Amino acid sequence: MEDAITLRHYAAPRYWPTWLGMVTMRLMAALPLAWQLRLGRWMGLLSLRVAPRRRRIADTNLRLCFPHLNSGQRRHLLREHFAALGIGMFETAAAWWAPDAALRGRVEIVGLEHLEQASASGKGIILLTGHFTCLELGARFITWHLDFHAMYRPHKNPLYEALMRRCREQQSRLPPLPRDELRATLRALRQGRAIWYAPDQNYGGTQSVFVPFFGIPTLTITATARLAQLGEALVLPYWPQRLADGRYRVIIQPPLSDFPSGEAQADARRINALLEDAIRQAPEQYLWVHRRFKTRPPGEPRIY
Image 1 (cartoon, rainbow, N blue to C red):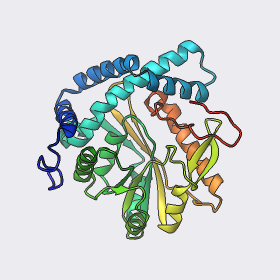
Image 2: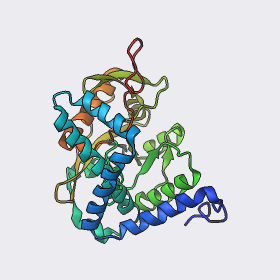
Image 3: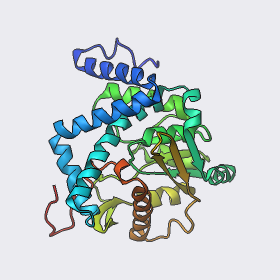
Image 4: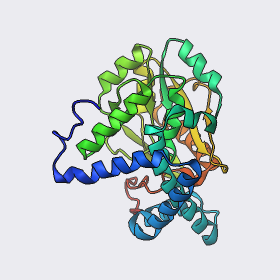
């Protein structure tokens, strides 16, 4: 473990819960797959009962994005989403600590030729994805075929951030990059390296536009197009998904053509449309507990 992650630096009592959580996650990664799925589902359904605020946010998001569902169908989807959140804790643990041998037979990668061709081009690559519950494990599967920098939002808990960076760098073999380090990101892209990027959260700020997401005007950052242009990079969408039998599928799509288009709203709308299509394949596995619609266009009422 790197020098920054030592008990000497993080021995204060306020860090003990984080250490305990990380030790627990490491033990979780060693459990048999059937136990991980069963325990994860149980923990997720428990959180459905004990986390009313997150439950309300997720229910609101599902009501807005899937208005065609009746109340019974929406309750079922909400329940399955929280089950997926619980399983996602075990998937994150597996992504960080499970040996390759335990994971190799659990995934089908569709479209690997797109990744190989993009890598052979010598250009930088933006691995574009979304915040799915198996996000970390999906990224681990990509690391078997390509080294990359993972872009991330800095965490308020410095120990958790240090441990997260350590685990991610061990797998991706390149250091993670905070999302506000634009120069380092562009340098990596121009040198032909890849970055992992999930732009589907509400970051606020001026570099965002309102475009539809499931038919709702949604504040969406325009950084994907800017990074592709300034970094002279290919944008390669990919989507991870847990299947009904506990195995996984990662779908890698061809690099986006004619991107960026030069029109920020059109590019952001295109990214949201791609994400929508991927979500519909397994809607319970998207991160609905995030307040995606917290910023509203002028004159519109608050949603949460």
